[in-house]
Image 1 (cartoon, rainbow, N blue to C red):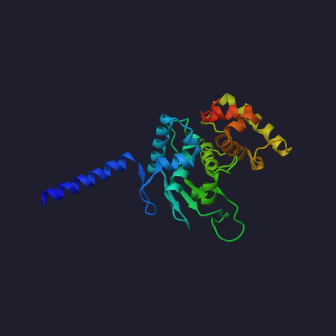
Image 2: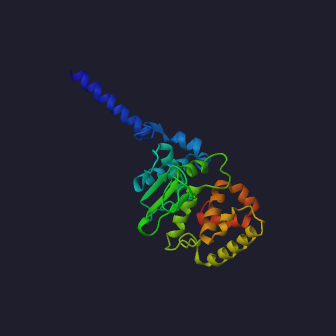
Image 3: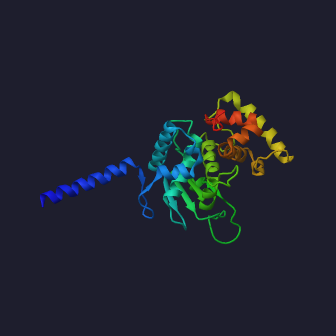
Length: 258
């Protein structure tokens, strides 16, 4: 009896050692998925990192899970959903080792697009993501369909989840205005605004490949070009070298690697 009990304790201990060493993320729906493998196959940003970079990325993922609650409305949250949301948060702040999203407590995932009343059924559903304000302050709403598409092979220059996390970075100085004052030195603000307005004029004239949604206002311009910066860095660097250089300084990263 004592021997059997000791064997049982050894088996339980071995299980927890295995779990720790393999960094398993568990949910009620898909238990036992190794997130190293998911990150490597689903997140190209992570895949391109060296071993040291991957270790830092994984650490930031774990920190995000501790700090932010992820909930589903009309959809079941999977490990992949959680990893893609966390990756969307980590990518823009990867150049800032100590950055925390102090203005975020919850991410609410909808199955698809939703409307201004937060309904995901019926007509007039065209919202892919939203950073809450007022009574919704501290909340982020995302479309699961847009989240998955943003990390797919045919995403192009768009990633809705990264877009919303960049809005949070912009908002961290108190105003969502396309001027990330917490990320750039004051002398660079006027040149940045000049560059923004020049590029908006080119978009309006049909002379730019940047998504026309960037014309909405300076805040949307910043979020849209940030998507481009992280999704297609080599292309942005080739077609918009000055914009790429400025974004590289703002985010403290050089994803094009050259």
